[in-house]
Length: 347
Image 1 (tube, rainbow, N blue to C red):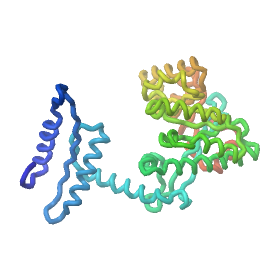
Image 2 (cartoon, rainbow, N blue to C red):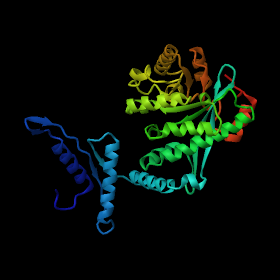
Image 3 (cartoon, one colour):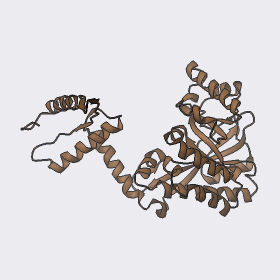
Image 4 (cartoon, rainbow, N blue to C red):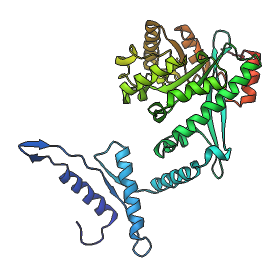
């Protein structure tokens, strides 16, 4: 360990040498063991920064190295500081976000592109943060999971969406429509999750077949046995299951035939440039064929251009959502769309 302060460049060079030395394989009981090492480097001004500041920054740099895949060196930057401050602020205000009334839902219509008929609506949570304004789920869901608030947040979304949907059905405007609700990885493995879903559906007098819970493709393979058990319980409760962001990985294919799934949603990354990107078209065609082979419903996410919509229709994918069709709307506007039954399309 250096006995004197180092310049920024020298500190980073030392960290790289240290990591290289620590990564060398070690012989134990006749076997060579491989080690991985993540190192964080932080700098400070003598007399201006306390030792605690340096330790906090170095810790943030190590965390950044691990999040990047580990076994590397990361140097603390101002961007890391901003991200850390943002995360800390989000974590602080999440503690009472459900009781504060700052959460609300928007809804994203899903239509049959041949007719414009509304087939489903996806509930999307929003947060009116006291100082940062409107926040989308990507800004706070991961933080909620890390501080064990995903379950509480998920329950709020489930109950609020079901309450809205129940009102729409009572008004006779959502009889043949499906309500889609996203489920976080933490919710899926939380004890009592299936019971909560069943009780909520029963409380609001809904038919489980009109509710579709969406899980991401990556979640399916994280713990396949737990996922399979939970999904089986949800199917007993009568709800539908969709795999969201489908096509981003292939490991789920080996399990697809054994999972009680009803719908595949093609990831927006493959839909956005349809009509101009042959590689995306090849993947979309493969997913369409897969859905047909398994007898599953298919929905295209992120349809933003008429060209993409026409390409999907040409290859047999009729259900879609995206900005070409509609941006997320308030519950009041969603009710108006349901009453009209159709979204006007110009393809």
